[in-house]
Length: 144
Image 1: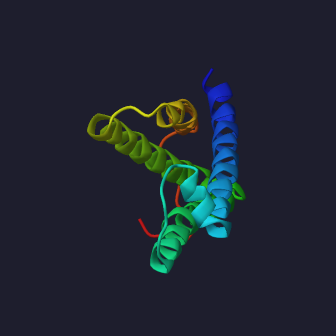
Image 2: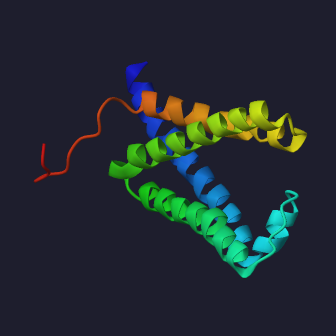
């Protein structure tokens, strides 16, 4: 069973990183190319040039940079755990903030629906990390 788990973990990690790459790319691209339209779809209005540029960066550049990092980690078995750890951290933070928002602002059905994919990818992240073993090993010549 341990041998099977050690083989399954990296594949789950690859799945998580591939999904994160696609999702973060889609979010980033939407907000970089059409911040006004993407914001309007959530009920937010951008009324100034500064608001548009800030949205491009905050909702476009940051998710797109996470997509690039996820893809970079997907390309190497040594970086799988690092990438999945970042995805798990981002999703845990997003879920916690979404819960805080639900308590502070009330329940929005559109927001509640996002819990399902976020929780599923988080569960896969935790499972992949657990199945892929303990600490990542240092590369030759790496510092302890």
